[in-house]
Amino acid sequence: MKFLTLDTGCCHAGFRQSGLFCWSVVGPVSKERDIPDKYTAFAPFYDAFSGEYPVYRAGRDRGIEALAPRPGDEVLDVGCGTGLNFPLLQERIGPAGMIVGIDRSARMLEQARRRAARAGWKNVILIQADAVLLDAAAIRAAIQEQGGSPECDAALATYSLSLMPEWQRAWANLKALLKAEARVAVVDMKDPEGWARLLTPLARAACALGGADITAHPWLAVEEDCTNVIRSSARAGHLQIRAGNLHRNHPDRPPGPGSVPQIT
Ligand SMILES: C[S@@+](CC[C@H](N)C(=O)[O-])C[C@H]1O[C@@H](n2cnc3c(N)ncnc32)[C@H](O)[C@@H]1O
Image (cartoon, rainbow, N blue to C red):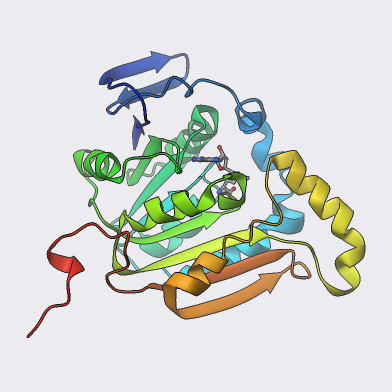
């Protein structure tokens, strides 16, 4: 397993170690990187107290089912947190595949690193970076340096884009790391529907506690940018799931041999 730090700001390269943390610093480094957010303190308790089994696991299951990564695929997990998606992804991609987990929180990544170490996975690349601010070229280079492919086959963002005030920029960055027509999936939250509207204050409080904007609705980007869109919801509409194939030659794709239509 590989653990990298990539960020924005002044240039820095080297190796960084602190207690349990051990990772390469391979890119520019932000002055803000070490400012703790709520996920810094909460990281060791996230899996137990985030409502995973009563609520959020249902969206994760459906999102990965809709994403349908294939054996050998390289899957980008944006805002991967502690890696709760990883076991479900591993079941599908197998040892020939690769997971690239990006998160801005070193503490969340440390939990993801421990998960991968416990399971003995050798096919996980972890990168500390801000999904909104990242430089896609630097991330691609770092993935490649660690034995991955610079363009991923698929990407997912579960309960992460709604935490990013400028999630559209993170979405554009995500697309810039993918192959043409890659599969993408977004799982995120909104107010519950029907009888469950009674639970709206609870849903809003849970989102606010986690720092998420329940009105962000980032899955709309999948509706806009993809074909073959699969739409699904769970927990009385509180969890929204969308997956699809990016349009070929989407504007965020870097120029390259695969990015222009081939005339045969
Ligand atoms: C609610 S957790 C979800 C984690 C994981 N995707 C899951 O399904 O369990 C949100 C994660 O997004 C990360 N995050 C928030 N803003 C971010 C940003 N701008 N760039 C990268 N990661 C970010 C947080 O550090 C946190 O780990």
